[in-house]
Amino acid sequence: MINEITVSQLKHWQDTQQSFQLIDIREDEEVALGSIGGEHIPMARVLNHLDKIRKDVPVVVHCNSGKRSSAVVYTLMHKHQYNNVYSLCGGIQAYAAEINPAIFQAY
Image 1 (cartoon, rainbow, N blue to C red):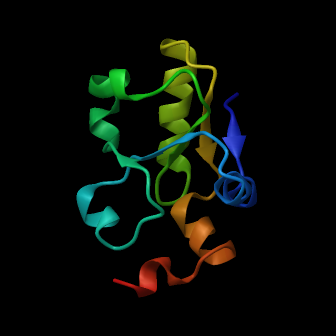
Image 2: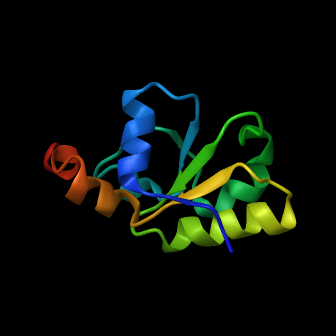
């Protein structure tokens, strides 16, 4: 089991200025196509940058579709004792489809 968050929940956190950390684990070329903000730490480098992942606020990890972020959240929860990490269901594709279609049109 892993923690997950929907794009509508994430949007609510953004709109209400909830304190959280957003981490984009996509590759550089994917980020260049569109972004919802957050700190960019490519998946292959996440475990080398555990010091950048906060433990005092919720942390939302996202990728393109949610598959890679689910794997990262699983590892952080089960091997590194993070209990505050969430995978964004459907990733940036779901965010673009449900919240902001202009994400990819601007690039």
